Amino acid sequence: MTMSDWSKVTRPIPVPNEWTKPFWEAAKQGVLALQRCRACGYFQHPPYATCVNCISTDLAFEPVRGTGTIYAYTIMYHTGDARFAPAVPYASIIVELDDAPRALLVGNLLDAPYTAAKVGRRVEVVFQQLTDDITLPQFRLLGGDLDSSNAPQRRTG
Image (tube, rainbow, N blue to C red; front, side, top):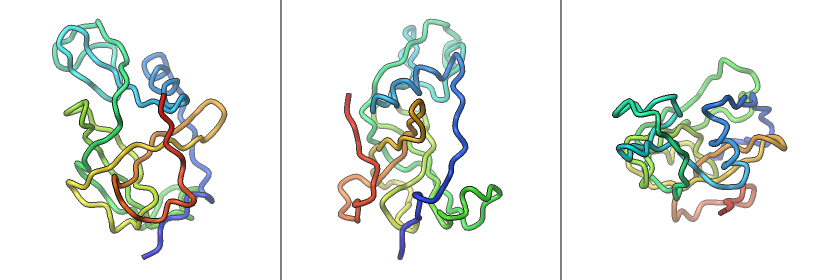
């Protein structure tokens, strides 16, 4: 089974706003940081103006390790956006992070055949630089022995 070719994909570039800017700034440094409520300790993603658990506005971004479990996935065999056509088929995954239960992060499974995406499989974050300002958190299988010669490198901060 071949792996998706992300090298030919020209992605839409995320535009940070006042709530997401700390997430993107951390990713640029190779750090995965999620919004956490200081009142109740709840991690949430995407970021909001208030805690979705207790409605507090006392929120801050905290680094998390970036390891987790595939919570759900879908295999993209067709794309509505021609820019993604070179990567089809690919696995789009939702990950529940070890350090932030219930805060789900969406990404793509890199460095593995799309058929390797399975609920319950362990993954780790990798960072894919899109522009000088935007670095995208993605995922690869944890402890896998699949080819990673063309992989984005994991950076730690």
